[in-house]
Length: 281
Image (cartoon, rainbow, N blue to C red; front, side, top):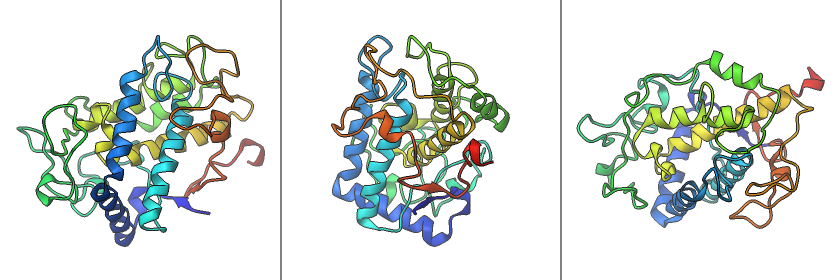
């Protein structure tokens, strides 16, 4: 089975393969279609409307399916490529390995946030930002400027300990694991990482920064860990709920996938340190 690895453990060849597959998807226009899809859902998902990808119980299964679709596109370029995950509780600074010039490139320059090194720098001519939230056509980052610190392992553990998946009113004010993971309540995990990176990661067009995929691969891993710790805690809501995706409702933009289809990652991939189901510990 294919394995998603910690980015810190990747070989030089694995890093190059991931980068080159992204650049090829960018060259063909496939990459920007993913950015457009995500941006559209961010703009439409609100607390009082029909919400699918954000501010709702389907945040986690939706992004799992989104990553699977992107991973399949990468594998059309290079069958060996998997999305690595970024453990931001361990790799917590602008000097961490993922920001190296041979991988994602580093922080943006002070005056405008433009990333100046690495394969996704505008100067390299291979990664123009086409799906824009403003007029700037270059990748931007402001690591650690908008929020000083990434989530800690202790903060992560407080969220993983929550036994309830989600609760009414099923939006950004809900209690439960999903909303604390997404970051609208409590210690704020997922949202805080977006803001720490800055630049396009603070917008609906956040997949413009390739770190988006590695960040969400770790969020996905944490969801798998949470399910292994709380095997009796189901996805909620189950049925009959207005404006959100119930367990067996289809998730837009797909017409063939439900949250129920996405609850278990193991039919699709494993992690290099896969969580062990509680019953087998």
